[in-house]
Length: 290
Length: 323
Image 1 (tube, rainbow over the protein chains, first blue to last red):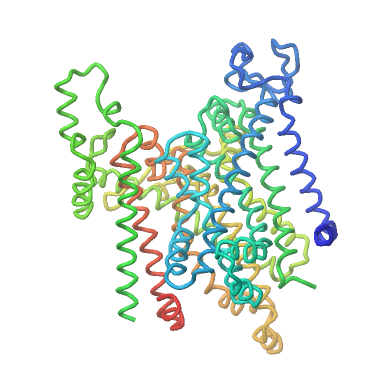
Image 2 (tube, rainbow over the protein chains, first blue to last red):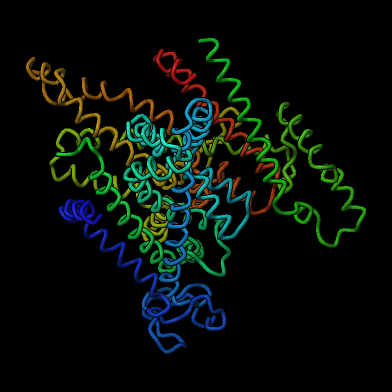
Protein backbone atom coordinates (compact mmCIF):
# COMPACT_ATOMS: atom_id res chain seq x y z
CA UNK A 1 0.00 0.00 0.00
CA UNK A 2 2.80 2.42 0.81
CA UNK A 3 4.69 1.82 -2.38
CA UNK A 4 2.36 3.72 -4.75
CA UNK A 5 2.31 6.58 -2.28
CA UNK A 6 6.08 6.67 -2.19
CA UNK A 7 6.13 6.79 -5.97
CA UNK A 8 3.56 9.60 -6.12
CA UNK A 9 5.43 11.56 -3.49
CA UNK A 10 8.73 11.04 -5.27
CA UNK A 11 7.29 12.53 -8.43
CA UNK A 12 5.52 15.30 -6.55
CA UNK A 13 8.77 16.30 -4.84
CA UNK A 14 10.36 17.20 -8.16
CA UNK A 15 8.13 20.26 -8.51
CA UNK A 16 9.52 22.71 -5.98
CA UNK A 17 6.67 25.18 -6.34
CA UNK A 18 4.12 22.47 -5.60
CA UNK A 19 6.08 21.29 -2.55
CA UNK A 20 6.23 24.84 -1.22
CA UNK A 21 2.51 25.24 -1.89
CA UNK A 22 1.78 22.00 -0.08
CA UNK A 23 3.84 23.21 2.87
CA UNK A 24 1.84 26.44 2.90
CA UNK A 25 -1.46 24.54 2.82
CA UNK A 26 -0.38 22.30 5.67
CA UNK A 27 0.92 25.24 7.69
CA UNK A 28 -2.34 27.14 7.25
CA UNK A 29 -4.35 24.06 8.19
CA UNK A 30 -2.21 23.58 11.30
CA UNK A 31 -2.51 27.23 12.31
CA UNK A 32 -6.27 27.11 11.79
CA UNK A 33 -6.52 23.93 13.83
CA UNK A 34 -4.51 25.41 16.69
CA UNK A 35 -6.23 28.81 16.45
CA UNK A 36 -7.52 28.79 20.06
CA UNK A 37 -3.94 28.30 21.29
CA UNK A 38 -2.32 30.87 19.02
CA UNK A 39 -4.89 33.65 18.85
CA UNK A 40 -4.51 36.30 21.54
CA UNK A 41 -8.30 36.66 21.74
CA UNK A 42 -11.41 34.55 21.19
CA UNK A 43 -13.12 36.67 18.53
CA UNK A 44 -16.48 34.94 19.05
CA UNK A 45 -16.66 35.79 22.73
CA UNK A 46 -18.71 38.98 22.57
CA UNK A 47 -17.92 39.77 26.21
CA UNK A 48 -14.23 40.15 25.32
CA UNK A 49 -14.82 42.71 22.57
CA UNK A 50 -14.24 46.32 23.54
CA UNK A 51 -15.81 48.93 21.28
CA UNK A 52 -13.12 51.43 22.32
CA UNK A 53 -10.67 49.26 20.39
CA UNK A 54 -12.72 49.23 17.17
CA UNK A 55 -11.11 49.99 13.80
CA UNK A 56 -7.60 50.54 15.16
CA UNK A 57 -4.70 50.29 12.71
CA UNK A 58 -2.13 47.47 12.80
CA UNK A 59 0.27 47.74 15.72
CA UNK A 60 -2.23 49.32 18.07
CA UNK A 61 -2.00 48.26 21.70
CA UNK A 62 -5.56 47.70 22.88
CA UNK A 63 -7.21 47.55 26.27
CA UNK A 64 -6.30 43.86 26.44
CA UNK A 65 -2.68 44.92 26.89
CA UNK A 66 -1.35 43.13 23.80
CA UNK A 67 -0.46 44.40 20.32
CA UNK A 68 -3.09 44.01 17.59
CA UNK A 69 -0.55 43.17 14.91
CA UNK A 70 -3.11 43.37 12.09
CA UNK A 71 -5.37 45.97 13.72
CA UNK A 72 -8.97 45.54 14.80
CA UNK A 73 -12.30 45.41 13.00
CA UNK A 74 -15.51 47.42 13.47
CA UNK A 75 -16.54 45.40 16.53
CA UNK A 76 -13.16 45.75 18.18
CA UNK A 77 -12.10 42.23 17.30
CA UNK A 78 -8.42 41.52 17.06
CA UNK A 79 -8.09 40.98 13.32
CA UNK A 80 -5.29 38.44 13.60
CA UNK A 81 -7.43 36.25 15.85
CA UNK A 82 -10.48 36.77 13.64
CA UNK A 83 -8.50 35.66 10.60
CA UNK A 84 -7.28 32.51 12.34
CA UNK A 85 -10.81 31.60 13.39
CA UNK A 86 -12.14 32.64 9.99
CA UNK A 87 -9.65 30.29 8.32
CA UNK A 88 -11.05 27.48 10.48
CA UNK A 89 -14.57 28.15 9.23
CA UNK A 90 -13.51 28.58 5.61
CA UNK A 91 -11.45 25.38 5.56
CA UNK A 92 -14.13 23.47 7.43
CA UNK A 93 -16.81 24.50 4.94
CA UNK A 94 -14.55 23.96 1.95
CA UNK A 95 -13.54 20.46 3.01
CA UNK A 96 -17.04 19.51 4.15
CA UNK A 97 -18.68 20.73 0.95
CA UNK A 98 -15.91 19.28 -1.23
CA UNK A 99 -16.09 15.85 0.41
CA UNK A 100 -19.90 15.74 0.37
CA UNK A 101 -19.91 16.72 -3.29
CA UNK A 102 -17.25 14.06 -3.95
CA UNK A 103 -19.26 11.30 -2.29
CA UNK A 104 -22.56 12.32 -3.86
CA UNK A 105 -21.13 13.00 -7.31
CA UNK A 106 -19.01 9.83 -7.34
CA UNK A 107 -21.96 7.64 -6.38
CA UNK A 108 -24.15 9.27 -9.00
CA UNK A 109 -21.53 9.05 -11.73
CA UNK A 110 -20.49 5.45 -11.06
CA UNK A 111 -24.11 4.32 -10.71
CA UNK A 112 -24.95 5.98 -14.01
CA UNK A 113 -22.07 4.12 -15.67
CA UNK A 114 -23.06 0.85 -13.99
CA UNK A 115 -26.74 0.88 -14.89
CA UNK A 116 -26.35 2.33 -18.38
CA UNK A 117 -29.29 2.82 -20.72
CA UNK A 118 -32.04 5.22 -19.81
CA UNK A 119 -30.97 5.77 -16.21
CA UNK A 120 -27.49 6.73 -17.38
CA UNK A 121 -28.88 9.04 -20.05
CA UNK A 122 -31.23 10.69 -17.57
CA UNK A 123 -28.63 11.25 -14.85
CA UNK A 124 -25.95 12.50 -17.20
CA UNK A 125 -28.37 14.80 -18.98
CA UNK A 126 -29.16 16.51 -15.68
CA UNK A 127 -25.46 16.71 -14.85
CA UNK A 128 -24.64 18.18 -18.26
CA UNK A 129 -27.40 20.72 -17.91
CA UNK A 130 -26.16 21.74 -14.51
CA UNK A 131 -22.57 22.07 -15.72
CA UNK A 132 -23.69 24.64 -18.25
CA UNK A 133 -24.96 26.78 -15.37
CA UNK A 134 -22.25 28.83 -13.66
CA UNK A 135 -21.63 27.33 -10.21
CA UNK A 136 -21.63 30.73 -8.57
CA UNK A 137 -25.11 31.54 -9.88
CA UNK A 138 -26.45 28.21 -8.72
CA UNK A 139 -24.94 28.59 -5.26
CA UNK A 140 -26.26 32.13 -5.11
CA UNK A 141 -29.79 31.07 -5.96
CA UNK A 142 -29.74 28.17 -3.52
CA UNK A 143 -28.24 30.23 -0.71
CA UNK A 144 -30.98 32.80 -1.31
CA UNK A 145 -33.70 30.17 -1.36
CA UNK A 146 -32.47 28.06 1.57
CA UNK A 147 -31.59 30.91 3.89
CA UNK A 148 -28.64 31.44 6.21
CA UNK A 149 -26.82 28.77 8.16
CA UNK A 150 -23.96 26.30 7.97
CA UNK A 151 -26.03 23.36 6.71
CA UNK A 152 -27.79 25.47 4.09
CA UNK A 153 -24.52 26.91 2.88
CA UNK A 154 -22.87 23.51 2.55
CA UNK A 155 -25.97 22.20 0.76
CA UNK A 156 -25.81 25.08 -1.71
CA UNK A 157 -22.09 24.47 -2.33
CA UNK A 158 -22.58 20.73 -2.78
CA UNK A 159 -25.46 21.26 -5.19
CA UNK A 160 -23.33 23.69 -7.16
CA UNK A 161 -20.33 21.35 -7.36
CA UNK A 162 -21.35 17.71 -7.30
CA UNK A 163 -21.84 17.76 -11.08
CA UNK A 164 -18.08 18.07 -11.70
CA UNK A 165 -17.48 14.91 -9.68
CA UNK A 166 -20.37 13.09 -11.32
CA UNK A 167 -19.01 13.94 -14.77
CA UNK A 168 -15.49 12.78 -13.87
CA UNK A 169 -16.65 9.64 -12.07
CA UNK A 170 -18.91 8.74 -14.96
CA UNK A 171 -16.11 9.08 -17.47
CA UNK A 172 -13.73 6.92 -15.44
CA UNK A 173 -16.36 4.36 -14.46
CA UNK A 174 -17.57 3.91 -18.05
CA UNK A 175 -14.06 2.81 -18.97
CA UNK A 176 -13.81 0.46 -15.98
CA UNK A 177 -17.29 -0.92 -16.59
CA UNK A 178 -16.23 -2.60 -19.82
CA UNK A 179 -13.08 -4.19 -18.35
CA UNK A 180 -12.87 -7.87 -17.66
CA UNK A 181 -12.37 -7.72 -13.91
CA UNK A 182 -15.75 -5.99 -13.56
CA UNK A 183 -17.38 -8.64 -15.69
CA UNK A 184 -15.74 -11.28 -13.51
CA UNK A 185 -17.06 -9.59 -10.38
CA UNK A 186 -20.51 -9.37 -11.91
CA UNK A 187 -20.54 -13.05 -12.75
CA UNK A 188 -20.24 -13.87 -9.03
CA UNK A 189 -23.39 -13.57 -6.91
CA UNK A 190 -22.20 -10.29 -5.41
CA UNK A 191 -24.81 -7.57 -5.06
CA UNK A 192 -24.49 -4.69 -7.53
CA UNK A 193 -23.76 -2.17 -4.79
CA UNK A 194 -20.67 -4.14 -3.72
CA UNK A 195 -19.39 -4.34 -7.28
CA UNK A 196 -19.80 -0.60 -7.73
CA UNK A 197 -18.31 0.37 -4.36
CA UNK A 198 -15.56 -2.22 -3.98
CA UNK A 199 -14.45 -2.79 -7.55
CA UNK A 200 -15.38 0.10 -9.84
CA UNK A 201 -15.14 3.06 -7.48
CA UNK A 202 -11.58 2.50 -6.17
CA UNK A 203 -10.28 2.50 -9.74
CA UNK A 204 -12.00 5.81 -10.44
CA UNK A 205 -10.41 7.54 -7.47
CA UNK A 206 -7.30 9.19 -8.99
CA UNK A 207 -9.19 11.57 -11.30
CA UNK A 208 -11.70 12.24 -8.52
CA UNK A 209 -8.92 13.23 -6.14
CA UNK A 210 -7.64 15.70 -8.70
CA UNK A 211 -11.09 17.25 -9.06
CA UNK A 212 -11.47 17.28 -5.28
CA UNK A 213 -8.37 19.41 -4.63
CA UNK A 214 -9.50 22.01 -7.13
CA UNK A 215 -13.08 21.90 -5.88
CA UNK A 216 -12.08 22.43 -2.26
CA UNK A 217 -10.36 25.63 -3.32
CA UNK A 218 -13.44 26.54 -5.32
CA UNK A 219 -15.71 25.84 -2.35
CA UNK A 220 -13.65 28.12 -0.16
CA UNK A 221 -13.72 30.83 -2.79
CA UNK A 222 -17.46 30.40 -3.39
CA UNK A 223 -18.21 30.49 0.32
CA UNK A 224 -16.22 33.69 0.67
CA UNK A 225 -18.07 35.23 -2.27
CA UNK A 226 -21.47 34.25 -0.90
CA UNK A 227 -20.57 35.54 2.55
CA UNK A 228 -19.34 38.74 0.98
CA UNK A 229 -22.71 39.16 -0.74
CA UNK A 230 -24.42 38.61 2.61
CA UNK A 231 -25.74 35.13 1.74
CA UNK A 232 -23.42 32.98 3.81
CA UNK A 233 -23.14 32.36 7.52
CA UNK A 234 -24.69 34.48 10.25
CA UNK A 235 -22.35 37.38 11.12
CA UNK A 236 -21.65 36.36 14.73
CA UNK A 237 -18.97 33.89 13.63
CA UNK A 238 -17.42 35.55 10.61
CA UNK A 239 -15.70 33.49 7.95
CA UNK A 240 -13.00 35.17 5.86
CA UNK A 241 -15.54 36.37 3.29
CA UNK A 242 -17.66 37.94 6.01
CA UNK A 243 -14.64 39.70 7.54
CA UNK A 244 -13.82 41.17 4.14
CA UNK A 245 -17.43 42.25 3.63
CA UNK A 246 -17.56 43.89 7.04
CA UNK A 247 -14.42 45.87 6.32
CA UNK A 248 -15.57 46.98 2.87
CA UNK A 249 -17.59 49.97 4.09
CA UNK A 250 -14.60 51.28 6.04
CA UNK A 251 -12.20 50.89 3.17
CA UNK A 252 -13.47 53.99 1.40
CA UNK A 253 -12.33 56.02 4.41
CA UNK A 254 -8.85 54.52 4.17
CA UNK A 255 -9.14 51.79 6.84
CA UNK A 256 -7.82 49.20 4.45
CA UNK A 257 -6.63 46.58 6.92
CA UNK A 258 -10.06 45.23 7.91
CA UNK A 259 -10.67 43.92 4.38
CA UNK A 260 -7.18 43.47 3.01
CA UNK A 261 -5.58 41.12 5.54
CA UNK A 262 -8.39 38.55 5.58
CA UNK A 263 -8.32 38.76 1.79
CA UNK A 264 -4.60 38.02 1.68
CA UNK A 265 -5.09 35.02 3.95
CA UNK A 266 -7.87 33.78 1.68
CA UNK A 267 -5.86 34.19 -1.49
CA UNK A 268 -2.73 32.55 -0.14
CA UNK A 269 -4.85 29.57 0.86
CA UNK A 270 -6.66 29.31 -2.49
CA UNK A 271 -3.57 29.83 -4.66
CA UNK A 272 -1.60 27.28 -2.63
CA UNK A 273 -4.34 24.66 -2.96
CA UNK A 274 -4.62 25.35 -6.69
CA UNK A 275 -0.86 24.97 -7.18
CA UNK A 276 -0.92 21.61 -5.39
CA UNK A 277 -3.95 20.64 -7.47
CA UNK A 278 -2.17 21.59 -10.71
CA UNK A 279 0.77 19.32 -9.89
CA UNK A 280 -1.46 16.44 -8.84
CA UNK A 281 -3.44 16.81 -12.05
CA UNK A 282 -0.29 16.72 -14.17
CA UNK A 283 0.86 13.61 -12.33
CA UNK A 284 -2.38 11.76 -12.94
CA UNK A 285 -2.66 12.90 -16.54
CA UNK A 286 -1.48 9.98 -18.70
CA UNK A 287 -0.96 12.24 -21.71
CA UNK A 288 1.86 14.07 -19.96
CA UNK A 289 3.63 10.85 -18.87
CA UNK A 290 7.23 10.60 -19.87
CA UNK B 1 -32.86 16.34 -37.47
CA UNK B 2 -36.40 17.61 -36.96
CA UNK B 3 -37.09 14.81 -34.49
CA UNK B 4 -33.94 15.76 -32.59
CA UNK B 5 -34.97 19.40 -32.45
CA UNK B 6 -38.45 18.53 -31.19
CA UNK B 7 -37.04 16.17 -28.59
CA UNK B 8 -34.60 18.78 -27.32
CA UNK B 9 -37.33 21.42 -27.29
CA UNK B 10 -39.53 19.12 -25.21
CA UNK B 11 -36.64 18.48 -22.81
CA UNK B 12 -36.02 22.20 -22.47
CA UNK B 13 -39.70 22.72 -21.74
CA UNK B 14 -39.77 20.04 -19.03
CA UNK B 15 -36.64 21.45 -17.40
CA UNK B 16 -38.19 24.89 -17.46
CA UNK B 17 -41.34 23.59 -15.75
CA UNK B 18 -39.32 21.80 -13.06
CA UNK B 19 -37.27 24.92 -12.43
CA UNK B 20 -40.38 27.09 -12.24
CA UNK B 21 -41.82 24.74 -9.61
CA UNK B 22 -38.60 24.66 -7.58
CA UNK B 23 -38.16 28.40 -7.77
CA UNK B 24 -41.73 28.96 -6.72
CA UNK B 25 -41.46 26.54 -3.81
CA UNK B 26 -38.12 27.86 -2.66
CA UNK B 27 -39.13 31.47 -2.81
CA UNK B 28 -42.43 30.67 -1.17
CA UNK B 29 -40.68 28.87 1.66
CA UNK B 30 -38.40 31.66 2.82
CA UNK B 31 -39.34 34.71 4.82
CA UNK B 32 -42.70 36.33 5.14
CA UNK B 33 -43.18 39.13 2.61
CA UNK B 34 -46.07 40.52 4.65
CA UNK B 35 -43.55 41.80 7.20
CA UNK B 36 -41.76 43.66 4.46
CA UNK B 37 -44.88 44.98 2.77
CA UNK B 38 -46.84 46.25 5.68
CA UNK B 39 -45.59 48.49 8.42
CA UNK B 40 -45.96 46.82 11.84
CA UNK B 41 -48.45 49.44 13.05
CA UNK B 42 -50.86 49.02 10.11
CA UNK B 43 -54.29 47.86 11.28
CA UNK B 44 -55.84 44.47 10.53
CA UNK B 45 -57.99 45.79 7.64
CA UNK B 46 -55.02 47.12 5.72
CA UNK B 47 -53.11 43.89 6.33
CA UNK B 48 -55.89 41.75 4.90
CA UNK B 49 -56.33 44.03 1.95
CA UNK B 50 -52.66 43.81 1.00
CA UNK B 51 -52.59 40.03 1.55
CA UNK B 52 -55.61 39.61 -0.74
CA UNK B 53 -54.18 42.03 -3.30
CA UNK B 54 -51.04 39.90 -3.71
CA UNK B 55 -52.99 36.61 -3.49
CA UNK B 56 -51.00 35.48 -0.45
CA UNK B 57 -54.12 34.01 1.21
CA UNK B 58 -54.72 31.35 -1.46
CA UNK B 59 -53.54 27.73 -1.07
CA UNK B 60 -50.05 27.02 -2.37
CA UNK B 61 -51.05 25.13 -5.52
CA UNK B 62 -53.47 27.86 -6.57
CA UNK B 63 -50.74 30.42 -6.14
CA UNK B 64 -48.49 28.23 -8.32
CA UNK B 65 -51.08 27.87 -11.08
CA UNK B 66 -51.71 31.59 -11.03
CA UNK B 67 -47.94 32.10 -11.10
CA UNK B 68 -47.58 29.87 -14.17
CA UNK B 69 -50.47 31.56 -15.96
CA UNK B 70 -48.97 34.99 -15.39
CA UNK B 71 -45.50 33.73 -16.32
CA UNK B 72 -46.70 32.63 -19.76
CA UNK B 73 -48.08 36.05 -20.58
CA UNK B 74 -44.92 37.68 -19.24
CA UNK B 75 -46.53 39.17 -16.15
CA UNK B 76 -44.15 38.79 -13.22
CA UNK B 77 -46.22 40.92 -10.89
CA UNK B 78 -45.19 44.11 -9.13
CA UNK B 79 -42.08 44.55 -7.08
CA UNK B 80 -42.90 44.79 -3.38
CA UNK B 81 -40.17 47.35 -2.85
CA UNK B 82 -40.19 49.49 -5.99
CA UNK B 83 -43.95 49.18 -6.54
CA UNK B 84 -43.60 48.89 -10.31
CA UNK B 85 -44.05 45.97 -12.73
CA UNK B 86 -41.13 43.57 -12.29
CA UNK B 87 -40.54 43.12 -16.00
CA UNK B 88 -40.21 46.89 -16.47
CA UNK B 89 -37.91 47.06 -13.47
CA UNK B 90 -35.62 44.33 -14.78
CA UNK B 91 -35.64 45.66 -18.32
CA UNK B 92 -34.69 49.11 -17.04
CA UNK B 93 -31.59 47.54 -15.42
CA UNK B 94 -30.54 45.35 -18.35
CA UNK B 95 -28.65 48.05 -20.34
CA UNK B 96 -26.28 48.72 -17.43
CA UNK B 97 -25.43 45.03 -17.12
CA UNK B 98 -25.17 44.58 -20.85
CA UNK B 99 -22.80 47.51 -21.14
CA UNK B 100 -20.61 46.21 -18.33
CA UNK B 101 -20.56 42.64 -19.61
CA UNK B 102 -19.80 43.62 -23.19
CA UNK B 103 -17.00 45.94 -22.12
CA UNK B 104 -15.49 43.17 -19.96
CA UNK B 105 -15.72 40.39 -22.55
CA UNK B 106 -14.44 42.59 -25.37
CA UNK B 107 -11.61 43.92 -23.25
CA UNK B 108 -10.62 40.45 -22.13
CA UNK B 109 -10.59 39.19 -25.71
CA UNK B 110 -8.71 42.12 -27.24
CA UNK B 111 -6.05 41.92 -24.54
CA UNK B 112 -6.07 38.21 -23.81
CA UNK B 113 -5.68 36.87 -27.34
CA UNK B 114 -2.46 38.77 -28.19
CA UNK B 115 -0.96 37.99 -24.78
CA UNK B 116 -1.91 34.33 -25.06
CA UNK B 117 -0.56 34.12 -28.61
CA UNK B 118 2.71 35.62 -27.49
CA UNK B 119 2.94 33.16 -24.60
CA UNK B 120 2.22 30.32 -27.02
CA UNK B 121 4.70 31.62 -29.59
CA UNK B 122 7.55 31.90 -27.09
CA UNK B 123 6.55 29.47 -24.35
CA UNK B 124 9.92 29.59 -22.60
CA UNK B 125 10.39 33.36 -22.60
CA UNK B 126 10.43 35.30 -19.37
CA UNK B 127 7.50 37.46 -20.44
CA UNK B 128 5.49 34.34 -21.28
CA UNK B 129 6.11 32.87 -17.85
CA UNK B 130 5.02 36.17 -16.33
CA UNK B 131 1.84 36.17 -18.43
CA UNK B 132 1.03 32.62 -17.40
CA UNK B 133 1.71 33.37 -13.74
CA UNK B 134 -0.71 36.27 -13.93
CA UNK B 135 -3.32 34.07 -15.55
CA UNK B 136 -3.07 31.55 -12.70
CA UNK B 137 -3.56 34.42 -10.29
CA UNK B 138 -6.54 35.59 -12.34
CA UNK B 139 -8.10 32.16 -11.98
CA UNK B 140 -7.45 31.78 -8.28
CA UNK B 141 -8.19 35.15 -6.78
CA UNK B 142 -11.89 35.65 -6.07
CA UNK B 143 -13.51 38.36 -8.20
CA UNK B 144 -14.84 40.28 -5.24
CA UNK B 145 -11.45 40.66 -3.67
CA UNK B 146 -9.89 41.96 -6.86
CA UNK B 147 -12.72 44.50 -6.92
CA UNK B 148 -11.85 45.64 -3.42
CA UNK B 149 -8.18 46.01 -4.25
CA UNK B 150 -9.03 47.97 -7.41
CA UNK B 151 -11.21 50.36 -5.40
CA UNK B 152 -8.59 50.70 -2.69
CA UNK B 153 -5.84 51.40 -5.21
CA UNK B 154 -7.48 53.54 -7.88
CA UNK B 155 -10.34 55.16 -6.01
CA UNK B 156 -9.21 55.54 -2.40
CA UNK B 157 -5.42 55.81 -2.51
CA UNK B 158 -4.77 57.36 -5.91
CA UNK B 159 -8.17 59.01 -6.34
CA UNK B 160 -7.99 58.62 -10.13
CA UNK B 161 -11.29 56.89 -10.77
CA UNK B 162 -14.71 56.84 -9.07
CA UNK B 163 -15.61 53.77 -6.99
CA UNK B 164 -19.24 53.33 -7.91
CA UNK B 165 -22.41 54.25 -9.82
CA UNK B 166 -22.66 54.84 -13.56
CA UNK B 167 -21.80 58.54 -13.78
CA UNK B 168 -23.20 60.70 -16.57
CA UNK B 169 -25.25 58.87 -19.15
CA UNK B 170 -26.50 59.68 -22.62
CA UNK B 171 -29.98 58.53 -23.57
CA UNK B 172 -30.14 56.79 -26.94
CA UNK B 173 -33.47 55.28 -28.03
CA UNK B 174 -34.81 55.88 -24.52
CA UNK B 175 -32.01 53.89 -22.89
CA UNK B 176 -29.28 55.52 -20.79
CA UNK B 177 -25.70 54.48 -21.70
CA UNK B 178 -22.55 55.30 -19.77
CA UNK B 179 -19.95 54.56 -22.41
CA UNK B 180 -20.86 57.59 -24.50
CA UNK B 181 -19.65 60.15 -21.98
CA UNK B 182 -16.18 60.68 -20.58
CA UNK B 183 -17.51 60.59 -17.02
CA UNK B 184 -19.46 57.43 -17.78
CA UNK B 185 -16.34 55.78 -19.21
CA UNK B 186 -14.40 56.70 -16.09
CA UNK B 187 -17.10 54.99 -14.04
CA UNK B 188 -17.20 51.98 -16.35
CA UNK B 189 -13.46 51.32 -16.33
CA UNK B 190 -12.90 49.75 -12.90
CA UNK B 191 -15.96 47.45 -12.83
CA UNK B 192 -15.27 46.33 -16.40
CA UNK B 193 -11.64 45.60 -15.51
CA UNK B 194 -12.75 43.67 -12.45
CA UNK B 195 -15.20 41.58 -14.44
CA UNK B 196 -12.71 41.08 -17.27
CA UNK B 197 -9.86 39.59 -15.25
CA UNK B 198 -11.24 36.07 -15.00
CA UNK B 199 -12.12 36.01 -18.70
CA UNK B 200 -8.72 37.47 -19.49
CA UNK B 201 -7.01 34.61 -17.68
CA UNK B 202 -9.10 32.14 -19.64
CA UNK B 203 -8.57 33.82 -23.01
CA UNK B 204 -4.81 33.82 -22.40
CA UNK B 205 -4.82 30.10 -21.64
CA UNK B 206 -6.97 29.22 -24.64
CA UNK B 207 -5.01 31.39 -27.05
CA UNK B 208 -1.72 29.99 -25.75
CA UNK B 209 -2.80 26.39 -26.03
CA UNK B 210 -4.17 26.99 -29.53
CA UNK B 211 -1.08 28.82 -30.70
CA UNK B 212 1.26 26.13 -29.40
CA UNK B 213 -0.64 23.52 -31.33
CA UNK B 214 -0.92 25.51 -34.56
CA UNK B 215 2.76 26.51 -34.54
CA UNK B 216 3.68 22.83 -34.93
CA UNK B 217 1.47 22.24 -37.96
CA UNK B 218 2.52 22.14 -41.60
CA UNK B 219 0.64 25.34 -42.32
CA UNK B 220 3.22 27.33 -40.38
CA UNK B 221 6.10 25.38 -41.95
CA UNK B 222 4.86 26.12 -45.47
CA UNK B 223 4.20 29.75 -44.63
CA UNK B 224 7.76 30.04 -43.35
CA UNK B 225 9.08 28.27 -46.41
CA UNK B 226 7.18 30.77 -48.56
CA UNK B 227 9.19 33.50 -46.88
CA UNK B 228 6.45 35.13 -44.89
CA UNK B 229 7.49 37.10 -41.83
CA UNK B 230 6.69 35.72 -38.40
CA UNK B 231 4.37 38.64 -37.81
CA UNK B 232 2.34 37.84 -40.92
CA UNK B 233 2.17 34.18 -39.98
CA UNK B 234 0.85 35.00 -36.53
CA UNK B 235 -1.60 37.66 -37.66
CA UNK B 236 -2.85 35.99 -40.83
CA UNK B 237 -2.73 32.25 -40.23
CA UNK B 238 -2.41 31.41 -36.56
CA UNK B 239 -4.99 33.94 -35.43
CA UNK B 240 -7.48 32.66 -37.97
CA UNK B 241 -6.93 29.04 -36.99
CA UNK B 242 -7.24 29.54 -33.25
CA UNK B 243 -10.22 31.85 -33.58
CA UNK B 244 -12.83 29.08 -33.99
CA UNK B 245 -12.62 27.70 -30.43
CA UNK B 246 -12.13 31.23 -29.12
CA UNK B 247 -15.36 32.41 -30.69
CA UNK B 248 -17.24 29.42 -29.28
CA UNK B 249 -15.97 30.10 -25.80
CA UNK B 250 -16.58 33.82 -26.25
CA UNK B 251 -20.24 33.11 -26.92
CA UNK B 252 -20.65 30.58 -24.13
CA UNK B 253 -18.81 32.70 -21.63
CA UNK B 254 -21.10 35.61 -22.21
CA UNK B 255 -23.71 33.85 -20.10
CA UNK B 256 -21.35 33.12 -17.23
CA UNK B 257 -20.06 36.68 -17.30
CA UNK B 258 -23.60 37.72 -16.50
CA UNK B 259 -23.34 35.51 -13.42
CA UNK B 260 -20.12 37.09 -12.24
CA UNK B 261 -21.59 40.52 -12.90
CA UNK B 262 -23.65 39.95 -9.75
CA UNK B 263 -20.50 40.21 -7.67
CA UNK B 264 -18.93 43.10 -9.55
CA UNK B 265 -22.12 45.13 -9.64
CA UNK B 266 -22.57 44.73 -5.90
CA UNK B 267 -19.06 45.96 -5.15
CA UNK B 268 -19.18 48.93 -7.51
CA UNK B 269 -22.88 49.75 -6.87
CA UNK B 270 -23.38 49.39 -10.60
CA UNK B 271 -27.15 49.59 -11.08
CA UNK B 272 -27.60 46.48 -13.24
CA UNK B 273 -29.68 43.33 -12.78
CA UNK B 274 -27.02 41.68 -10.62
CA UNK B 275 -27.22 44.41 -8.01
CA UNK B 276 -31.00 44.28 -8.31
CA UNK B 277 -31.13 40.58 -7.46
CA UNK B 278 -28.84 40.93 -4.43
CA UNK B 279 -30.89 43.87 -3.16
CA UNK B 280 -34.14 42.01 -3.68
CA UNK B 281 -32.80 38.93 -1.89
CA UNK B 282 -31.95 40.98 1.17
CA UNK B 283 -35.29 42.83 1.13
CA UNK B 284 -37.25 39.61 0.36
CA UNK B 285 -38.68 41.16 -2.78
CA UNK B 286 -40.11 37.86 -4.00
CA UNK B 287 -41.54 38.83 -7.41
CA UNK B 288 -38.16 40.23 -8.46
CA UNK B 289 -36.29 37.15 -7.22
CA UNK B 290 -38.67 34.81 -9.03
CA UNK B 291 -38.51 36.81 -12.25
CA UNK B 292 -34.70 36.99 -12.17
CA UNK B 293 -34.30 33.28 -11.50
CA UNK B 294 -36.76 32.36 -14.23
CA UNK B 295 -35.19 34.68 -16.78
CA UNK B 296 -31.68 33.45 -16.04
CA UNK B 297 -32.82 29.82 -16.19
CA UNK B 298 -34.56 30.55 -19.49
CA UNK B 299 -31.45 32.26 -20.86
CA UNK B 300 -29.18 29.33 -20.01
CA UNK B 301 -31.61 26.70 -21.24
CA UNK B 302 -31.87 28.61 -24.51
CA UNK B 303 -28.09 28.84 -24.85
CA UNK B 304 -27.82 25.11 -24.13
CA UNK B 305 -30.52 24.28 -26.62
CA UNK B 306 -28.91 26.37 -29.35
CA UNK B 307 -25.46 24.88 -28.67
CA UNK B 308 -26.91 21.37 -28.87
CA UNK B 309 -28.64 22.15 -32.14
CA UNK B 310 -25.54 23.80 -33.57
CA UNK B 311 -23.34 20.84 -32.64
CA UNK B 312 -25.86 18.40 -34.05
CA UNK B 313 -26.01 20.37 -37.28
CA UNK B 314 -22.22 20.32 -37.53
CA UNK B 315 -21.60 16.77 -36.37
CA UNK B 316 -24.08 14.05 -37.34
CA UNK B 317 -22.60 11.65 -34.78
CA UNK B 318 -23.96 13.82 -31.96
CA UNK B 319 -27.51 13.25 -33.17
CA UNK B 320 -27.25 9.52 -32.75
CA UNK B 321 -25.22 9.41 -29.58
CA UNK B 322 -27.02 12.07 -27.61
CA UNK B 323 -30.57 11.38 -28.77
